[in-house]
Image (cartoon, rainbow, N blue to C red; front, side):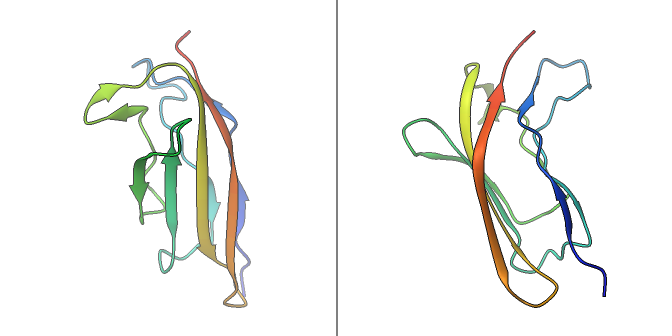
Length: 96
């Protein structure tokens, strides 16, 4: 069995230059079954959610840029042994 591999960046720059413009956990061997990726603002409001491991957050809410700052992510996925893993942390969004 292949075990899930996971890397989560700690910052991104959605400034339109196509370099580091999307916040997306880098996953390998992660099933879309039970996969959830959510972003919250500083007040705890959910501003992004997907069940697709290939879809990241572009730094927008309803196609409007969010302010630069710190946002919270929560990632849930299924481990090879059918254990559900939850990871939470911070991501820094800035416009260079």
